[in-house]
Image 1 (cartoon, rainbow, N blue to C red):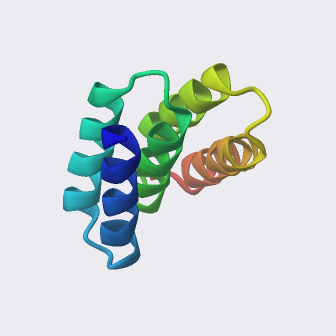
Image 2: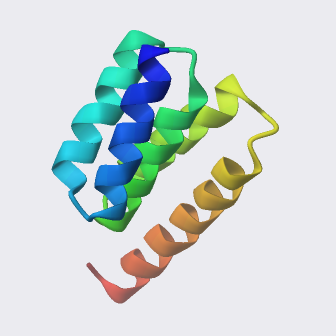
Length: 92
Protein backbone atom coordinates (compact mmCIF):
# COMPACT_ATOMS: atom_id res chain seq x y z
CA UNK A 1 0.00 0.00 0.00
CA UNK A 2 1.00 3.65 -0.33
CA UNK A 3 1.95 4.23 3.32
CA UNK A 4 4.22 1.17 3.36
CA UNK A 5 5.87 2.21 0.09
CA UNK A 6 6.49 5.74 1.38
CA UNK A 7 7.85 4.41 4.67
CA UNK A 8 10.16 2.00 2.86
CA UNK A 9 11.42 4.73 0.53
CA UNK A 10 12.01 6.93 3.57
CA UNK A 11 14.00 4.16 5.20
CA UNK A 12 16.28 3.88 2.17
CA UNK A 13 16.88 7.62 2.34
CA UNK A 14 17.56 7.34 6.09
CA UNK A 15 20.18 4.67 5.42
CA UNK A 16 21.81 7.02 2.89
CA UNK A 17 21.80 9.76 5.58
CA UNK A 18 19.38 11.85 3.53
CA UNK A 19 17.47 12.86 6.64
CA UNK A 20 15.38 15.72 5.23
CA UNK A 21 14.14 13.57 2.34
CA UNK A 22 13.47 10.65 4.69
CA UNK A 23 11.42 12.91 6.97
CA UNK A 24 9.29 13.98 4.00
CA UNK A 25 8.54 10.37 3.12
CA UNK A 26 7.73 9.44 6.71
CA UNK A 27 5.41 12.45 7.02
CA UNK A 28 3.69 11.46 3.76
CA UNK A 29 3.30 7.87 5.02
CA UNK A 30 1.73 9.18 8.23
CA UNK A 31 -0.62 11.45 6.28
CA UNK A 32 -1.60 8.51 4.08
CA UNK A 33 -2.23 6.15 7.01
CA UNK A 34 -2.22 7.91 10.42
CA UNK A 35 -2.66 4.65 12.37
CA UNK A 36 0.52 3.05 10.92
CA UNK A 37 3.04 3.10 13.75
CA UNK A 38 6.23 2.37 11.82
CA UNK A 39 6.72 5.77 10.12
CA UNK A 40 6.30 7.51 13.48
CA UNK A 41 9.06 5.31 14.86
CA UNK A 42 11.28 5.89 11.83
CA UNK A 43 10.73 9.65 11.92
CA UNK A 44 11.59 9.50 15.61
CA UNK A 45 14.90 7.83 14.73
CA UNK A 46 15.79 10.68 12.38
CA UNK A 47 14.85 13.27 14.99
CA UNK A 48 16.88 11.40 17.60
CA UNK A 49 19.92 11.32 15.31
CA UNK A 50 19.52 15.08 14.81
CA UNK A 51 19.46 15.62 18.59
CA UNK A 52 15.80 16.69 18.62
CA UNK A 53 15.01 14.53 21.63
CA UNK A 54 11.62 16.05 22.54
CA UNK A 55 10.28 15.60 19.02
CA UNK A 56 11.74 12.10 18.82
CA UNK A 57 10.09 11.16 22.11
CA UNK A 58 6.75 12.43 20.79
CA UNK A 59 7.02 10.15 17.76
CA UNK A 60 8.18 7.15 19.81
CA UNK A 61 5.24 7.67 22.18
CA UNK A 62 2.82 7.86 19.24
CA UNK A 63 4.22 4.60 17.84
CA UNK A 64 3.71 2.99 21.25
CA UNK A 65 0.19 4.40 21.53
CA UNK A 66 -0.66 2.74 18.22
CA UNK A 67 1.18 -0.49 19.08
CA UNK A 68 1.99 -0.98 22.78
CA UNK A 69 4.02 -4.11 21.90
CA UNK A 70 6.47 -2.16 19.69
CA UNK A 71 9.65 -3.03 21.61
CA UNK A 72 12.04 -1.00 19.45
CA UNK A 73 9.94 2.12 20.02
CA UNK A 74 9.96 1.50 23.78
CA UNK A 75 13.74 1.06 23.82
CA UNK A 76 14.26 4.14 21.65
CA UNK A 77 12.01 6.20 23.90
CA UNK A 78 14.00 5.16 26.97
CA UNK A 79 17.28 5.99 25.22
CA UNK A 80 16.02 9.40 24.07
CA UNK A 81 14.99 10.22 27.64
CA UNK A 82 18.41 9.21 28.98
CA UNK A 83 20.26 11.16 26.29
CA UNK A 84 18.14 14.26 26.85
CA UNK A 85 18.89 14.09 30.59
CA UNK A 86 22.62 13.65 29.89
CA UNK A 87 22.58 16.59 27.49
CA UNK A 88 20.87 18.77 30.12
CA UNK A 89 23.43 17.75 32.77
CA UNK A 90 26.22 18.82 30.45
CA UNK A 91 24.51 22.19 30.12
CA UNK A 92 23.54 22.23 26.45
